[in-house]
View (cartoon, rainbow, N blue to C red):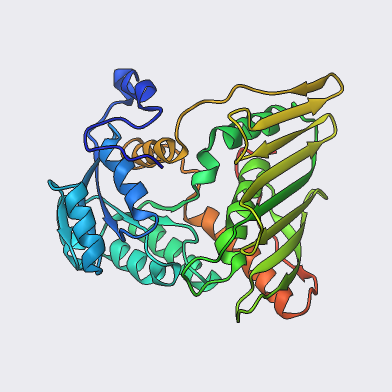
Length: 350
C-alpha cells in the first residue's frame, strides 16, 4: 500500500471529517506491538485517522524499531511491549506480530486494562481464543480481531445484498484464496487463510456451521499448505472454501448464490470487482473507494468511544475458531465429518 505520512489522510477520510457533531469524539490513543509485515499498515492508518491517535510502537527487532522511529519520529518507540502496557495514556493495543505470539500479548494487554485489536487469527487454538474472549468480557474491555476483508467495499456491498434479500434465500457460498508462498509463521494454511473466508461467511449469513469436512495436502512442509473446507450451515445452506499457499497467482474470490441471483467478489480484479447476476442480466455496482483498514479503524474507535456494536469481537472470533478447529480435526481424520454443537445465529440476522 502507498505510504501516508503523519497528519495526512487515507482514502475515505473525507467522509469521516464531514460527520455530524454527535459522532465526533476525542481520538482513541493507540499503540502497536509488531512493526513487521502488517504493523506498518496499522501505523499508517492509526496515525492518519481522525478518530485515532498513534502514540507508541514496540518491536524487539532493532532494524524494524529504527524504521518505525524514522517513519514516526514523534511517537514513542520501544523494544519492550510492556512499556506500552504500563502507559496510562494508551487505550488500545493493536497486535501485529506472528500468530503464535497473539495469545500472550493480547492476554497481557487485557490484564493491563487495555482494549485490544489483534491481527487474525486472534490465537492459534480454539482454547486460547475462548480464553481471550472470556477475559475481555470479565474485564469489560473491547477485544476485536482484525478481519480487514469484512470492511472491504465489495464485502460491505455483499452484506447489503444478503441482508435485503436481493439475492433471494442464500443457498451457497464459495471462495478461493491463493497465495504464491507461505508466510513466516508456524501456523498452517487453515488458520492463516481460511480464517478470512470463514469470517466472511459468518458475517454475511449470520448462520452457524453445523458440520465441517476438510481435506488437505502438504508440499514439502510439515504443515498443511493447501486445504478445502466443505461446510454445512444450520439452515441447510452450504459453503466451500479452498485455500492454498502454493498457487501460481494470488487469487481472492467469493461467490454468494441465492434463489434469485448470485454475486461474485474478485478482490484482485478491477475497481468493478463485484458483479451481480439475476434474471435481468449482470450488474456491476460502483463501489466505494474507501480503504478497508481505514474504515475498520474508525469502527474500532466508535466501538470503544460510542458503544457501536462490534463486527468482529471476541465471541465472533470464537465462532470462527470453532470452525477452524473442526477443520483441523477433520484433516487429521482424513476428511471425516466433524459435527458441531448448537450455537446461536448472530443477533439481528436471518
